[in-house]
Length: 68
Image 1 (cartoon, rainbow, N blue to C red):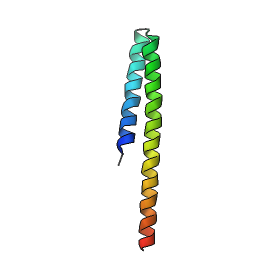
Image 2: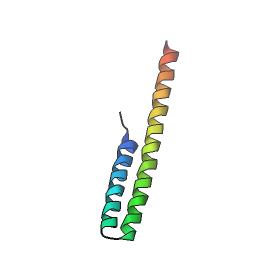
Image 3: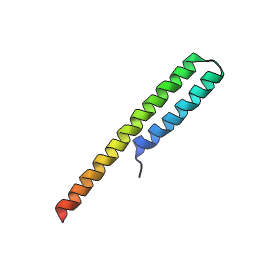
Image 4: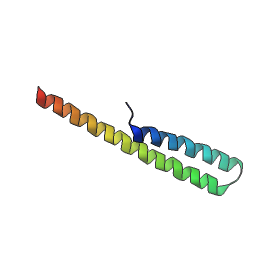
């Protein structure tokens, strides 16, 4: 199950790609750059979310192993 960071990061990536497309179509370099930054930020946030989820799953699995 995805966590908040993964969902928000994915949404930022989509928003960034859309901004880039509109920026390129309108030849707006600022919008294109903003879109690239948003996409990169979303990628990092999604990665942090995945890492957080994996760490949580590992801790949970270790706890279950100790319980046995």
